[in-house]
Length: 589
Ligand code: DON
Image 1 (tube, helix red, strand yellow):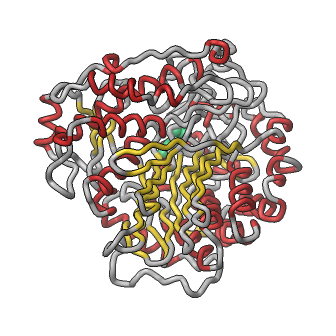
Image 2 (cartoon, protein in one colour):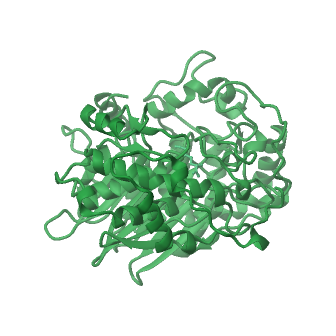
Image 3 (cartoon, helix red, strand yellow):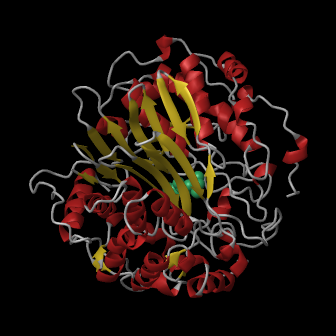
């Protein structure tokens, strides 16, 4: 979508939205000014990748909710207005900063493999359908993990929130029942998956006719989902994991070839984990631990970059367009992505000595493999480590990020996903069921939808969580929180977050520029340096990178980042930014 088309639609979407909470004191965007994807606020802000969802979060803040309430309400609204990217049938991660005691909590509500899953469950299984993303780990019942989103939202609100769950859910019930304007993004996403989606009776309603999609701006309702959300608001996660909704989830999963049981749903548990953190460039980066490999990738890359001489940093303040810097950044990702292939799995089932993997010796070895003017083969950065064999022996065996800052200084950084667009492309109780099983290795050495090659530790097994790249992050300086950031975009999640954080915090770019600047991506395998069509890197920079030996491949974009920057000195107190690559708008006061 062009920038002007996106703006025109964003105005339409905001104009058509009646306030779901009925709050009167949320400022409307100024009539003449085009809505800005990065805006300054003085009190609180929400940055989601969808304008209505940001607005719902801001209204919850106005209604006395805190960052946890607002993040939960925003997640729920996203599941209604953009079921392609996230919702109750998926899962995610929360990194929460509580200002009163400066504590950081990481909640892992990622999907789990059902008890009947096994390392060989995809061997010789034919594709259950035709068209894009049609493997058994991507489409239909065998593609779904047991959803974690309902338990995650329930825990966020009951543990950290200030409002009753029912109040937090209410705006989404209203959106689902009264309707909201269809967005251009969702209409575009229904295109390639139309034939698969029409197999499902609820998704069939998401088209205007056999031939055509629903035009953006048309008011649509999701009544079945509305009923499910109402039950969730009244009875919490219990309403989804037990009783009639749970029975429907199991039966719809099995009708599509899945292996869910009622016990799988009853057994679902959120896991609280210690976030990963490290100090680099005078800042503390706090981010996602395993089963995400994203946080590890970011911290090792930052350690390598921090260990390189100062001359590698761009000398032009406010710009990242510097071949020497981008070369160093791309090279720094090759080693950690290599580690991911070989070692990463569910940390509750495999041994993952993260401290050893991030050790100064290993970082130094990778710095010595770095060549300032040559792109090295990824294998040159390979550094095998000895693992504890007792634990590591395998038993042979669509996403959205949002940031919320509230008036007390609490911060919620949430990434939520159903994996590929519209998950496994079937619904239960109006909920889009995820295809998170594709984040496991279907077999050792096989690549998932994002080209990430999986190793034995990431084979599916009962109750396991697949390796993720989702990396909700908060960066601190000596005075406290400085940046909340996260992204959607598969393997590109982490490289995108890191670039936006470095752009704004190390290269002094205003948040809007840091978000819209050209990004690159390298994940070791394949040996390609990705540049964006959305924000093309200047031709002379590309030429210099090719001269170093990089194989440059353009792709549509490198992930979708939402971020909130907290000001210092004369800077605005809060700047909230939504990636122009997807069309979100921030909201707040
Ligand atoms: O957990 C992960 O890393 C993936 N399931 C994320 C998928 C994703 O970001 C899809 N895209 N927007």
